[in-house]
Length: 161
Image (cartoon, rainbow, N blue to C red; front, side, top):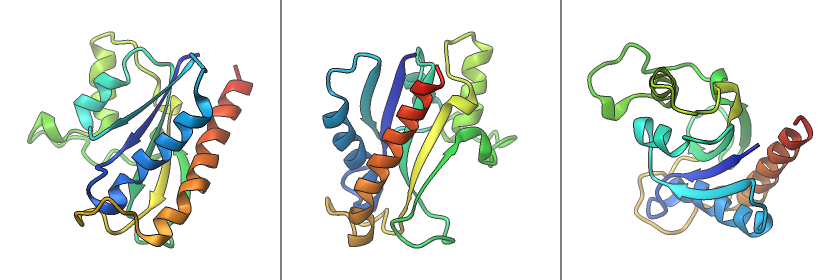
């Protein structure tokens, strides 16, 4: 099963770059595994959907701000467990949710993973708009935890094949 791991965010916006940092660490561990591809991207919606084309499983790594957990908390979940907050929002195709974009792609018969095969590793962050290449201390300390969470998702999915 082809798996794509994508670190999302912007590496020059402080904690928003944590997805990239985690993906870079995972790339070191998974080198030489042709069934796993690692990428970093600053994409969302339709553009991200296009990047997921051709993969059966995807793990997205990104900063998240819920305000409900301590900074640096790492959470994993399937995309289909998130509410689709932009469902019915039709102001612009540029701001559609990933779930909506995936449904559009599937309606065009693109080979895309099912929502329950799009997994998310989220790192609780707050400083995602500050221009900086540095992560805050709490988010930086969470990088190894997010790497391990991602590798665990990768292992558990491979065992289920």
